[in-house]
Image 1 (cartoon, rainbow, N blue to C red):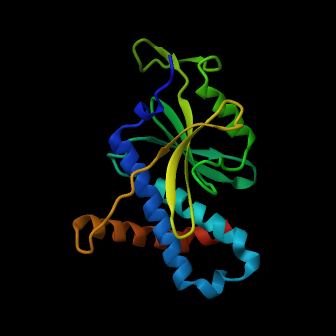
Image 2 (tube, rainbow, N blue to C red):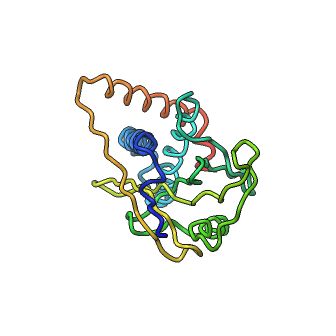
Length: 209
């Protein structure tokens, strides 16, 4: 039976993911506007891209401390002390990455290729989970929360094909709009302020090192 990927996420989960990207991306652009002389050199173009990604990833970690956060938060660790956030639910494993557009996969890596095999029923394996009844289930699907764009930012969820050679389906994320004086806007600006402070205190050294 065909997989309906749209049913994997709840409406609340999609809104939370959209908020993470919008807060992170907006805070990044605020930083670039105020610190343009520091990051304006052409040699720092790659660094600016890394900073943009780190802002969204750091916002994901900050949001995960909310008791109502709808995902389980983990950190996947690599050599040279690299760490990326990993979100999990019963149905999906989710990583965050930049992309050129919603139809292009982010750069490949061995862990992405391996996890992409979860998106084919023939590759999925039964896993034991004693917290569930019955105490077994299929491995969760694998997806990427991607974002990017200049002038017209986008965010979407990609389900890569097994083997990471293409995309099975793309789910555009809802764009949350804010009025100038709404309570939601105050919350949004407060989240940005917390993120920018966190980056300036802890994130600069990680990105430029």
